[in-house]
Structure formats: structure tokens, C-alpha cells
Image (tube, rainbow, N blue to C red; front, side, top):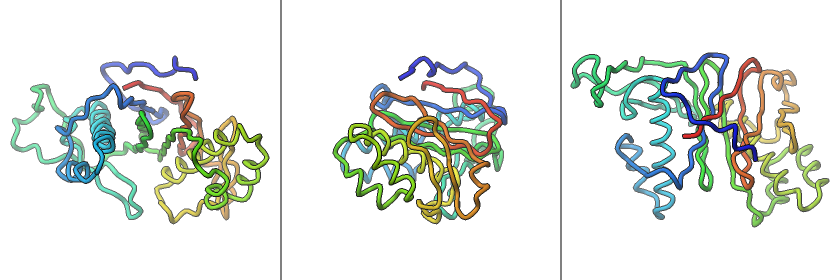
Amino acid sequence: MNDSIWIRPPENLDLATDRVDIWRVRMSSTTPSEESLSADERQRASRFHFDIDRDRYIVAHASLRDILARYLQCEPSELKFSTNEYGKPLLTRSNDSAKRPSGVSRSGKPATKVATTTNIEFNLSHSGDFVMIALARGRNVGVDIELIREDVELENLAFRNFSQTETQELMTLPVEQRPLGFFNCWTRKEAYIKAQGLGLSLPLGSFDVSLGEPAALLATRPGVSESLRWSLHSLNVESNYAAALAVEGNDFGIRHWDW
């Protein structure tokens, strides 16, 4: 794994239309705090039976708020989210800040109220000890991360969830290479589906991705030209993880930030 690509961000962050920012958050080094979460998020966190799952949810969603707030120059708790008809989270507007003096944030610093709508697109995924958060301006993004495990029924899951082309390629791999090939395929398909924002209405067998390097969207059906609109990228997180980023378009650079 090339850990040198993950660097600390500058104090002031912007997000140009030709940049995609991907953030890596290590849960074991982040203290769970519900302070910035909404009432709905806190209620969801309370429903987890195990503390470790509750803490992971809190870290993931609090980190997302903290990161978005840095770009939008507001307080994390001011951010408000909605979902589209397929359940994809969207950033809509800030909460009412009328109780505070105009232009002043809770921290006492000048505050810029978030607009009713923003063109920042984001996506979040977490597995094991990591949260991955992707952000772009004016283009759709999707991210997925999975801890590579040996105790899953790779072949059965592939036959149920992969396209025929992907399944055939997986079965041609040497046995010892199949876990990595499987999770590469899984994360790339998930990232693409999440970027599309169509949920389960996009059939898993309607497109093909690569199992090896480089990451690629190889074919889409029935619209064969759809694959040209998207880019797939592998993310080097840690050696026992597979992660992928799907981005609308090709004319952009990727910045890797360590939270």
C-alpha cells in the first residue's frame, strides 16, 4: 500500500469543479461525539445493539459533517440533509441560525450561512476501521470500502450479484487471488451504483467492472455509451481493504486527505 498519497489537508479548503476530494478517516483514532449530529441521527445511533456499531455510525456521520463544514465555512451542526427517491443522501441547506448574531458562528468566528441548495455532491462508506468520504462539485460521486475477508462464500455471492462476465473472470483466477478479485469487483460495483443514485433500481448485472488493475467500468447495458461518462478508481487504504471511487466524467484530479 502506498500510504504517502494520504496527506493532511490545509487549513483552508476549496473544491474546484475539476477536483475530487477523497477523505480517509481512521475510526480507532477518532473519538465518537454526537455533538454535531441531528436529532434523527442520534436516534439512529441509539438503535444499534452493540456499542462498536453505534460508535462507528457516530464517527462516520460526525466526520462527514465536520468535513463538509470546512468547505462550506459553517458549523457542522448547521448542515441539513435529505434523500432522493432512491434513498441517496443529499446536502440541502443549513438549519435556522436566526438565534445567533448575524455573521457569527458558534465558535465566535465569522460564519457563512449555507445556501438553500449546494452543488457539492458527496458519498460515504465505512467498513472495519475506516470511513471513506468522497466529495465533488457539480458531478456525481460514489465510494465504497470493504474489509477483505476470507470467511465469505465468494462464488455464491458472485453468482447472485455479479454479471456473467464478472463471475466467469472471478472463477478463472487462482484460488488465492479470488478474495481480492471479489472485493475489487464488489466495491467498484457499489461505488458506481451509489454514484448513479438509483439504488436497487439499477440491476447489478446491467454493467461490468474490472476485477484487477486498473479499475474500469468495462460495459453498460442497454446504453453502451454510458460507460464513457464515468471513471472508476482504486483507492489504496490498507493492504487488507478494497476500496473504489466512481466519478462522473474524466476531466478531474483526485486529492487524498487524511482526517
